[in-house]
Image (cartoon, rainbow, N blue to C red):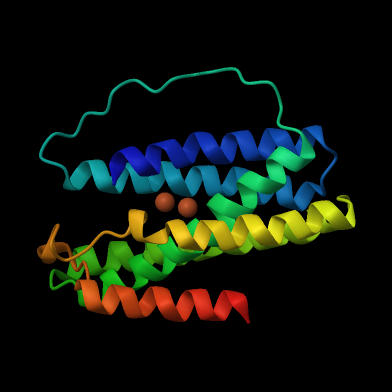
Amino acid sequence: MAILEQSAVVAFEELASTLRHHGAPETLVRRAMIAAEDERRHTAVALRLCAEPELPAREEAQRAPLTLLELARLNAREGCVLESFAALQVAWQARSVAAPQLAAELAQIALDEASHAELAWDVDAWLATVLTPEERDAMELVRREATAELPAFERTAAWLPEVGLQAQADLRQLRAEFVATLAA
Ligand SMILES: [Fe+2]
Ligand SMILES: [Fe+2]
């Protein structure tokens, strides 16, 4: 969890600079920077819960800014689909976990992740105003492909039941409802 949260910090910092590079509305840039701060907090929470509260130093790769189409693909996959589903999973986890403090922390993380997912959909809406119709159609396909990848990202009860991770069957149902809602 700590490693995933830490890589989300970098992802949102890159999102903010990419949005700024392409002249996106300042509110989107600001929300991406706030999201990076959220992810920094989530990393700290995860590390506090860790038996080994140390992470390898993170890579500071200076990447060339993404093109609009690259940004759209990444946002459609990682944000609109994966982060939306992650928010649902953590919300479920927060309700299932027994320890009250952990439940409260997970509930806050779920709210933050939901706002990040919302940001992805708002970035998607802005991109729709600057992409061609063909490129917009391609994003639909990217999202559909990403939903097919969801099973690989599921954290199940078989892994760590004491932190509120759901049983495989429940998770499958959550995913089915999410995919149906997206399709609708
Ligand atoms: Fe997070
Ligand atoms: Fe997030």
